[in-house]
Image (tube, rainbow, N blue to C red; front, side, top):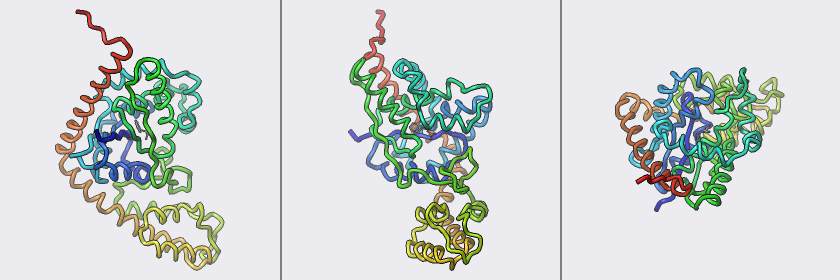
Length: 333
Ligand code: TRP
């Protein structure tokens, strides 16, 4: 049996370059070797969008388009909508007994997100406990490998702990998953912040048209110590050069720009212009494929429905084993 991949994204908007280097790239690379499931995690998205659930449907479609646009092959990869697999909620409920409140409180990613979100009425239980639901996502498909960005490592660790506890307590049914980080574990934002993130408004989206890419690149944060183009500049920690390293395949050009930047013989505008060119080239085939699928929404929905059907069948098989292991597979005849 081929080993299995499960990973996913919250449908809160279109996906960006950070998603690409953190996880999407690995999914595309591994889709031929692994039995791959990608989850559009709308239940998880609800944990901080429950006041505006009407936005989810359109974003489920957008995320599916992004998956297809980056080259996930619908013949191989199963695109699964989380809320259409109710078995996930059942498994989440059973997992809740295997996690302590103190463990949830220590999750560094959730802590950080709570700070960013500033929940006025206090932190909803749903948000705070979403690592448990994410553990169900991963384990119901018996995933071996989870391609994710660095911020998701605490979630995989939580899932591994739950699997160990479940298997020890009941029976060895679940698979302990491993995380797989992308070529760049954490892409900085255009503002130079540590992470590209929709809620921080510092993203370049996979579907951005060239004029939007230009706007975002030209307003990027560079080296704050450099006032004039003739000042020697800093390359390290400068997001414009981080992006060059990742997205500009012309390494000689990047080396030349770095050298001149350090000497103070090239201006930010030229460095950004070259980055713009590299990004537009990188995004062109993605945009092209996205537009083709977007013109045929019926086909996209068919792909989602078919992927979800296959995912649900697998989830149901796992749940039969889970209930049997837990001795709650009652037969009252
Ligand atoms: N928490 C992930 C994110 O914010 C999305 C996600 C939901 C996920 N379920 C998952 C990722 C299962 C990996 C595996 O991007």
